[in-house]
Length: 357
Image: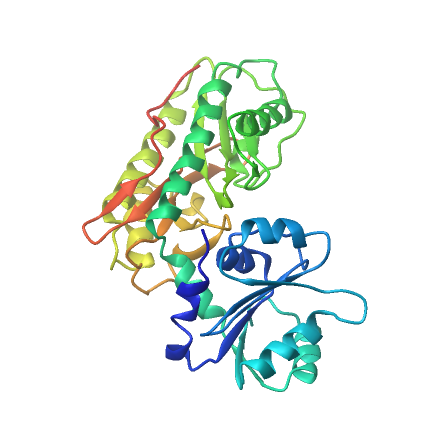
């Protein structure tokens, strides 16, 4: 799977003769081939697609990339030389670049080396990546299933005496065991008072009876990310713990009910936030309802209080409200949603009623 043609089809409407992709995620989105960091570059023109890389990746690129001219950089013939030839060959006058990612130094270098105007074009890729096609959706669902299998297993292992670090390590192993290529981010596993840290780092803390354990994790499958959070209790819960959990779940369900293409990110976030505020926990929900998920774990569009733009049909966003009581406990529940004109499809199947292990 690649999106060269999809990108090329948008060049004219953005008044571009081509677009240069140096960012790792955008290169993958265009080509379907992953190379690390700055070890690759894609050029999309209306007539032809190029992928430039070095000898470490050339053979693999030729095996995986369809419909593009694969060219190898080498001593005395670097990326700028290959780019310059292509720019001249296709008479490119306005070349899009990723203004959200390219450094000032890189921009200066290419502005001097290339006989064309560099035009900001990060929004072009962001808009395309925000809308998932059927093949992308299928892969995202498969990534979610892998994470859910890992969750089902880890629930049998959480008990008093196990540490947060041990649980996080097991989640990573289980996702790889079930077919993941990598983790989509470092797993968050926090328990008891550590649960009030939304992005807490797993520690040597031992899980104890009467505590919540929050696990936020995901994997990469065929280049796309999954993301989910579940909070479970060990042994027993207090009335306060149950009240906080029930409030978060009701807030999530309210946000999911409001989530659909055409709704603004602010409106979706607001539907969930209102539930938490009415329960008296407004000051303890500091982040937003959700973010886009795809090639990157955080990408557009976002369901945030600041996003007053309509969410597009085909977007995939997380649904993850939370309540965090400093030094005491925290609860977050997260699913991933596919937005349609009529509502949304929840890609996450794992149960989320309060589970006491």
